[in-house]
Amino acid sequence: GMIPLQFSWRIDVKTKSRKFNSLTEPTAIIELNVGKHDIPSDDPRNNLFRFEMTKDQLSDTLKQIESIENTLASFNNQE
Image (cartoon, rainbow, N blue to C red; front, side, top):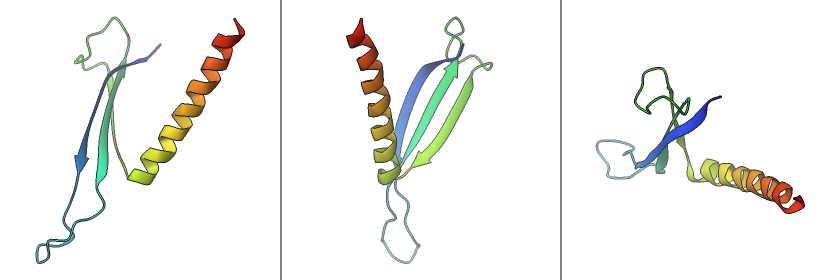
């Protein structure tokens, strides 16, 4: 199966217009490289997903990931 091989991110802040120095809401640019564990992360057969998230979108995503983590932990506690 496919697994996460590499994860990177950066923050992007754009100006609203050239005349004014006002900034738009910063966003996180996230890159997730997935592929097979026996293939190097830079192999072109892997898939690179690039997406942009606002602070609110990131917060919602982190809550969902925390829910996944808690569910996995509950299975580990049953053993």
